[in-house]
Amino acid sequence: MSEDTRSEVYAELAAVGPYGVRPGHALITMVEPHPGHEYAYNRWYEDDHYYAGAMAMPWMCAGRRWVAIRDLQLLRYPQTSAVAQPVTAGCYISVYWITEGRYDDHMKWTVAINRRLGRDGRVHQQRTHVFTAFQDHEATVYRDGAAGPRDYHALDHPYAGLVVQVIDTDGPAQRARLLEWLRGKHLPGRLAGSCAAMVTVFRPTPLPGDRMAHVKQVEGVDTRLTLLWFLEQDPRERWEDTFTGLDTAVAESGLGRVELVAPFVPTVPGTDRYVDRLR
Image (cartoon, rainbow, N blue to C red; front, side, top):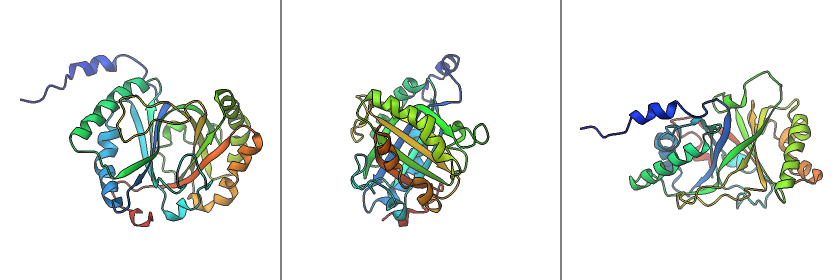
């Protein structure tokens, strides 16, 4: 006899609640596999966890995985980072969009499924979460206005690179001022003529109390912004003219301090490409 999956409830759930396409929320998770376990970690994530621990869940509508090989890690700054210690830690990052208005629904499922995966021995333990947070969408700034892919396309469009920028402030009021400065002045100017097609801006939300034990509570819930720069070229090709000095620009605004600028390139799903170039 087949297991009762209560399929009749699905029709009821589908008939209520938001079901737009906007990425109202994100899961951003930067992870460091332990030395000697790089291949095993990559195969586990590619073959199982990306799907069972993420994309198969309700309201997680898009996802993409990125990697920083050693030469990309060495471009990161600042050297003393509140996000990554050392700043080169966290060679893989995965980004997922969650449908706007469905955060609570998704969280109920993700907590339950991750408990089940743990019980079933489907969680790779030889890894460290460097920067893992669910985040709420605050803004998207486009280089080309209404032309080109939108933010809901960003994880499916074949972008050649990603730069993750984390900015800390002294409190909620200063963060609100920082967001307005980023959206209205800094990002439009920085994007013009660059290889970045868009920047999405998120703020972290606290993880639930019943999260998995290996995932630490989110820092900077009231003070931090996370920026994702989606690039049409490999970040190494335009690093100097677009991404150096982001810390100086924010410092000069008096509105915050950059705690991480980190470039990545996309992984190739189903392969071990780049695994031998992490160290």
